[in-house]
Image (tube, rainbow, N blue to C red; front, side, top):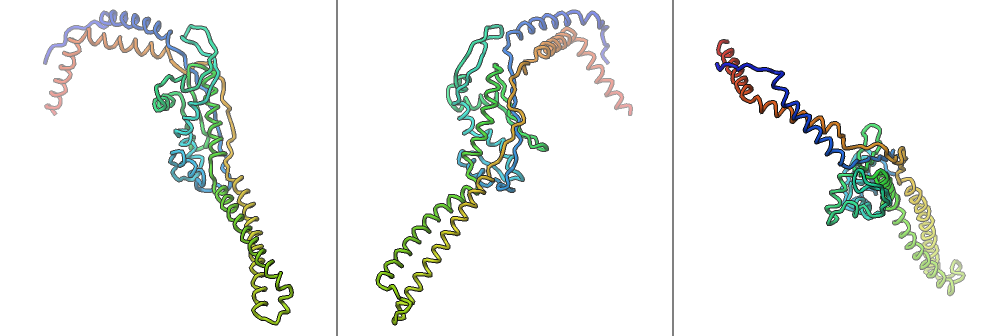
Length: 324
């Protein structure tokens, strides 16, 4: 068994502590020049409409039209996060122009900027801008409360607030204007069928009118064929009139269902203007770097003692196992 050399803990800590403190001061100075980031959050509580039921209905169709895959679930609001992550919504957000105050560097003076989010991210193309947008915009949904949280984190407090609020507005636009609900599909079909039924009723009226011009008293006619023709034309017209009435009622019902199918988004938090920074945590960075330097330097300076100590411990463990 190798003999463990003498070890002075107090003396071995002097240099590592000095190096750790020195690197810590340098790190603290560097972190002062790191930009501050500010996070703003919008909280939405969806209220599922009666028309949506247990599946997505027209929302899935609308999402598919923009390249968003919405799997089935117990509630449509479970897929709103997928809508928020869709390329359509991100492209709309990138094209939006914002006006906000910002600083060129940490200790610089504030200036008023007006630019699109695409320009702010400074990427070469849309694909890279969308990937960069994922770094500042995050959306999530609480499974129990069903609250949807949209958080935006940028170097400007105002921009963070504006991006979060704009994202919530785009979600509302998607649901209200782009969402082809089941009621909307029914209303469209009923409207088209009603137009056809009215044309058919007009044709039936025209045929009966022409028949009556030459057979005003067809019911008292001696010719059975004339009486049967008149009765058939009147019956056909009544059927067409009943069909128009029924379709008109169905259209109105479908329009009501369409209104009920649009989900309601209750705004719990409209997006605060952040005052305190969200990152970087400078103290954590400084302490972590100082500890890493201190431990690493101590191990390096005492590597011989550490090596012998580890070998001695291994041999002791092997001898114990052999004795057992």
